[in-house]
Image (cartoon, rainbow, N blue to C red; front, side, top):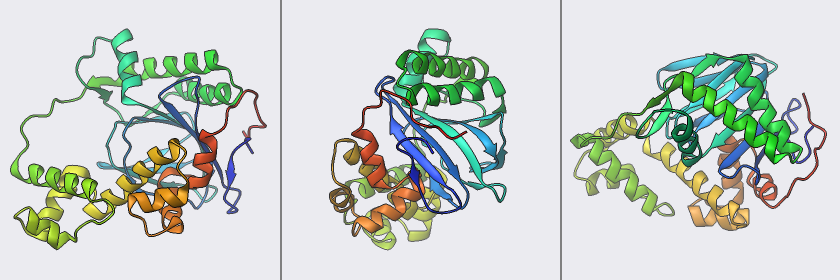
Length: 291
């Protein structure tokens, strides 16, 4: 088990989610999951993942894909997805979570892409890039910033050159999408005391089912699921600054720390306490890393 990784006590599952100071703007997750299931959620930044053993079933808006060793997953910001094991033995993988700004910097240097940059594919078979993803993890765990940054930029550059595209610019929103956007703003502003679906619809001058349809069409999940995801995201930002999990739970609208623990662990992949501890650590030497 990797130094700093968190055992779950279930079927040999373990996970480590951390931020490496040697590559600012990059978070990392390395894990083995068997029974863990990621619910529908999205990320502020990008997701670049490579399975090392087993199979991960990844559900995207356009269907489910099975991620095998040698494949690389690329998920653009704010794209809803969920995941679970595709075989009884689960899956082991490494994931990179680069910020939008970090990917945009690489794109500006090595491509002619303009505007908002993203990836045109969700999954590709590319063993060489998959190896680069794992090299980033190994170098970061060893405290080798030069190697980690190099492997990361090579991986992103390969994906951008082969699968990068300029994402469509947002034009004027249709009425239903504008309603969904307003609903999202209200939920974000009133995260600790959100209205019911009926009350929210009334405030926006629509019906509950019309709002539900508009919200799911705009964000790929119903309002209550989006709110849970938003609360977990805000909790992550609070934990990054050293806020205690119990305080973060109340500040984002969860009833108590166990409530935060349950949703945070499902979405992020590690408990909030382990997540916070990793951000307080400075790694200078490698631990024993599982294969």
